[in-house]
Image (cartoon, rainbow, N blue to C red; front, side, top):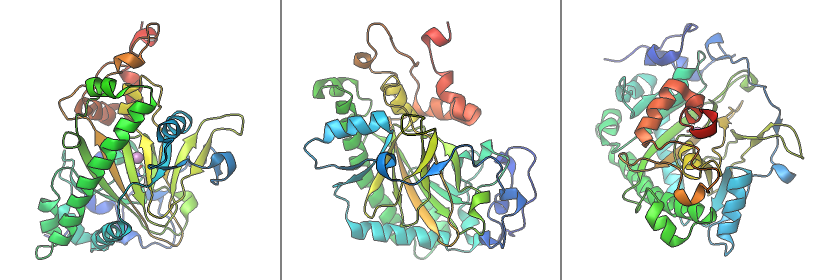
Length: 363
Ligand code: OGA
Ligand code: NI
């Protein structure tokens, strides 16, 4: 049955129970931002352009000084962009085309692939929506496992071009994610032997991963709304591909060059943005901090992005690596599986990392 797309009413409580058809009213065709999507607290910190010391590090993965560069970027930023990753531009063009094809479908058709309650995969609100009483200017499609089931519902006669690209993406990104995970562990000062002993991911087949497709339609008044509210990712690390439209911002702490500020991560063709997630924060005992980020929207252009979330195998508990805890400090976090941590995040959102802290804070 085709669902009707109607105007949203202003929700009074978090949105987890808001019917799906309300989240993308009129396919985002508005002359102004409706109250349901109007956010009040967007200008908590100034936004700065990516210049001078506020330039997000760009790292070539074939650089002979790679480990040192990753170490500096993770310590100072928690985010960097990569070239030299080996993924072909043609493939990224094909991926982008399939994402546009998906989000350009009529709303009632997309709802055929809607995320069922309690499910991870499918079309709908972006995953963090349930924590906010306002709607975000975006649509999401999460893929955990095979995309086939949902793709067949969207394109009964022509699902394979979408599935092929998504499956290839999953395959190449697992390998790239695993390589980066190992480089990041090396950059923490661990030896190859230490990594074999302590890394929760043994090889790239072993990694748990999810793909998140995001669509940010043009917005008549981008200063009044947000595409994706500020958050950290729960993963070890996330690799994000964005099209040529700017929108991603990361929060920089106060330092000698300025106050706490949002820094734009500009789209650079054929690069991925890598960011440190909460589980890497745990694994490194807080040395590599997970980075707060958000997505803004554009007045004229449609922005799309694809996040690839890399995490440990579902049954493996992740705690601080012994060698990184030191005799005095000891482990700061208790071990958790990705699933346990995601459950905590659903309950506590940005307080989840604090909730698994042990030691001085709790004593
Ligand atoms: C995410 C995310 C940023 C973007 O999906 O977790 O942070 O620019 N996306 O879409
Ligand atoms: Ni994110």
